[in-house]
Amino acid sequence: MQASSRIRPDILDEHAEEIEILWARRRDALWSHRETLESLEDLERRLDAHIDGLALDAEGAHECFARGLEGDDADAAFAAAAALLRQRTAGARERVHAAEKTASAGARRGIHEAIGFENPRPHVALQHRVDGARAACADPATATSTALFELGCLGVATDVAAIVRAARVPTLMEPAVRALGSLGLPAAVEALIALMETGAGPAAGVAFTRITGIEAVLRGDAPTDDDETFEETRPWPDAEATRARWESVSEAHTPDERRLHGRAIDEAAWLDAPHAGDLLTRREQIVRLRSRIPSALAKLDLDARAREQRSSAP
Image (cartoon, rainbow, N blue to C red; front, side, top):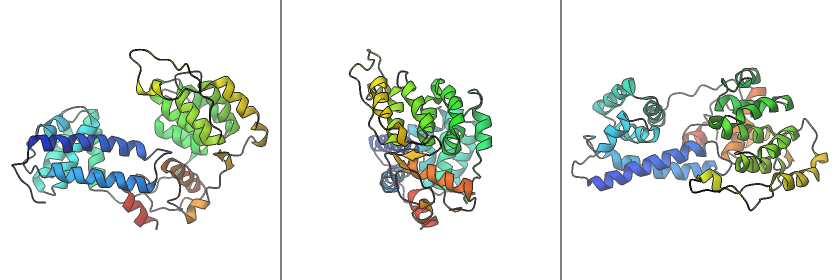
């Protein structure tokens, strides 16, 4: 890659900032019910353009490199490491790997993500088994977002209680509520309605709609204060009114039938159309498919670049 030592610092600032923003968006997009493989590909094109721009600083002298590699912010570390690796030089690679050895936990995460994004390794398909996820989620202290997701995909109605316990832990609230939405069962709907009266209200409303296809009824008195966060400004569902809507259709839902937007789920359809749907739904159905048929779509890495996903499962 051609480089210049005369690039304006403010231009490099802009590239670094945009990489941090776009990488955070990409990390979330992989688990989003609003994003598709097409929108992921568009986001990655923008991300690549800014990584190319920052990589033009051949000396890696801009302050964002030291700040990213020596700080504790995963997104800043990703920006620094990705730009260095994009230079494709031995010196840049050595700088990244040396930083990895002494990095803080946050920076190490970003460096690992950059290495995976810039130098992806051959994909090894994971074996998805519900027993391991169920064991991890039995105690909120050992539950993880990954285990909650797998339990949501593969669990049964009796797993709802463990997921709800995890939802009471602030750091697990969002993945736990998402897991209830992934579960797709009437028992999960009941739990989500109850969670609408807690700090998980907005996320519970989204998950409720994903299962039932019914819009949660919104209330006009969402909690607000001078220190409100983005989460607190999201539409807040009215649990009582939403329950009334659910009860008007709940008899049509059998206890053990998973539903998505009110319709029965057929994960086998993803064998023929592995890139269909939003990224969260696609991930859920492929995990379910692989739990039944371990060899299904074995080359497809759901965390890889969009173009690599397309080429591995055309």
